[in-house]
Image 1 (spheres, rainbow, N blue to C red):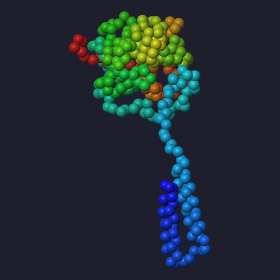
Image 2 (cartoon, helix red, strand yellow):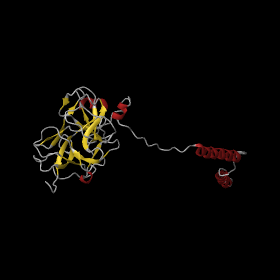
Image 3 (cartoon, one colour):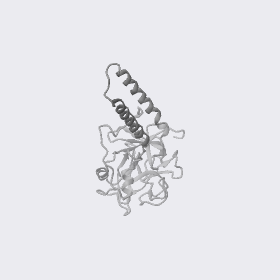
Image 4 (cartoon, rainbow, N blue to C red):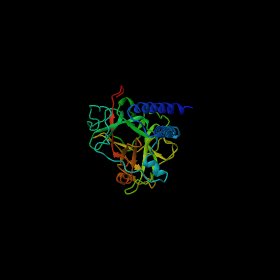
Length: 292
């Protein structure tokens, strides 16, 4: 019944037009009927097309990272176009203090971790909560920054643990890294990486142990950090399965997966994935506390 109403209106309209037109000249016999039939047929087809066209719902596709695809045995995604400045979003003002080039010396055993681009500009601070795949990401705000504690003031005797004081994942209180791909073979020319996340304690100079992490019961390392007191840069020593070590271990941030990684060979990772990642430095930013 709903389809007949607009058809009657259209037919009435054309009848009126034909009536007006007849004042000036007459149409050939049968023309009015043919015109009305054509109009009705056209209207029916239009309304029918509208009736049978299904609603097209936009599907929200969650694009997995190349690292996740590699673990599943899938090929990498197409390369991400790297427009100038595309890897450096500036969504909020940066702090005026030069956290990426701090004055030498450590004045507090409590501080934040700044993630800095190789040119010395600030990407952000390590965030107190994980990104979407359960490893640490960054934030521009100190209010949301992860606070860590050093075991003591320098000089340090070697590799140290960094304990997370305000992490959302309190069950895994140490800042470390957990298994990714070829995690026990951080060597040149090998595609390898681990995820920077919360872990339980593992002694220094020890290959990965299954102690639990923010990404589940997967092999991890925790006591991997050392602090350069001249630059306040935090560096990593990764221990392979054969007990060989890589120092300093490259750290990078991946914009697609929104998280920090360690890798045995950044050039190899970058060549294979081209996934919007960039090398970063971790810099310790001391804070003033009542006991400092």
